[in-house]
Image (cartoon, rainbow, N blue to C red; front, side, top):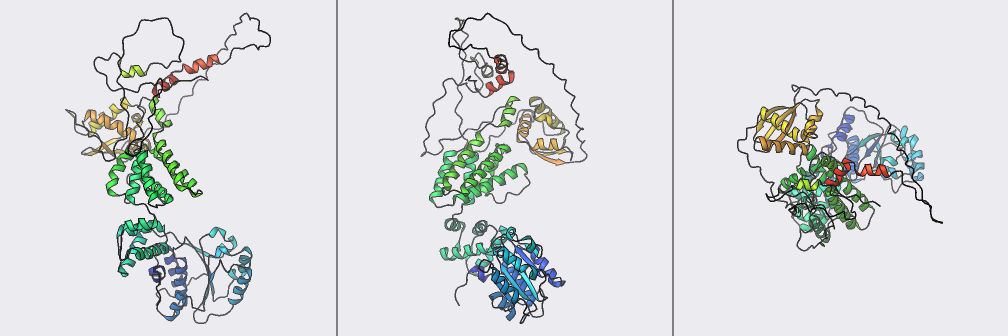
Length: 623
């Protein structure tokens, strides 16, 4: 006998062999046992999920000896004929090659004949959406009122192309993509029966590429056996099918979150030279970003697919990256994926998307501006440009008149502190005034250039302060009060909280189930940072917070409606000042003073504008 591929050799033979479609199998078995059989069924699902196999098993259950019954013998003659496509009572038709109205007319005439051996004459049409509109219309009357011995089974991957009049006459079953763990476990069983050693990591790598299709996974395993022999590991799967390993994806994500752009582009270059699929790489990156984002906002979610050696590093990078920036990064990567879909140069769009994504992490958004106006420092988000020794970046000359950044604490000989230097108003260059007495010299300490922190460096541990008190309900209230005084705009939103217990520096805090504002604030990374600073000052150690809900905690007070604001009085119009006009030369127009000069001066002298210029080290350029 000739060689038979795994997809045909290990095709399901009974209902018990169908994997990942329990909802379909249970419904069909109950219909057979209760004698509630319909005259038309429609199986919908992606490729390789078991539509044809389920239809054949259903036909065996209907036409087996003593049937219809669920527990039939797949080795009897009638069942073998159906499985091999030789049964006269089960007619399998390809809708793509028999889509004309003449084929449907012949089918309509043939269904009038009684079955030869079984109880039913079953018509199975695969890819039924390929039939023409005329063919569907010719089938309508027979499909609605077929003879008692006739049953129709349709299968399709695109149900939206089928006429609604056909859909309304069928019982529809949606076959779902098979989960990756089920596919991986089945592949390991097949490899064991074939005498092949298949590692669990390789099986999961095949399942991820198969994307829910069991037939695709079996075909890939067949190909790997031909290439590798009797031993298959994860690296073999990556080399054959261009799959990117989990460790490589974690490394690329760490480079991205740590703003190490040259290292990230160098890694992409190595993967492209090794023949990796750029679209698959971007898809794996987006999946990793999604997993870490969900873990950031919902820590109880599982993170089993992330490699253990990289999990701690990625969690540290995610803790110092705000959630809104991660969401913006996801939007940039999604845009790059859309551009790659219709482009032949996928690597170009991938690199441009990664560059835009790294720069989006370093951009100041509206949340950063609001925090800065409230007195919080801007986050330090440098982009590393000299991580790899073989990558050289051009040196950018400093601006002519930069505003010096905030300097570290000055020595005793310094006259003015750095904060006072920053608060100096930004002025537009003007003609030199009369000589004034020179002020005492101010000594400033130049700020060191920022660089990206290495990936595997642990965050600095807090040193316990002398005389720190243990964590308790009183110390928790002191921490909240101190953080509220220092950062009223962020920590001041905390309502009623109740201290429950402390294990080391892990505090369990309870809030009322309706107090969603306090619960969300305790999940906010910025609020936790402020509470940690206050805990360091009071108890000598940073804290971690575990939030639980408890109905015994006092509920939040109802919101107080705001008082109506008084209507502002109209400002008096400025009086026009008349001045003697000088005669204008011939051919020149008279220059009329601008009526908006007063409002522009008020705009430039606004305190908020001056604060924004001071915080962002900017200046206004009049055009």
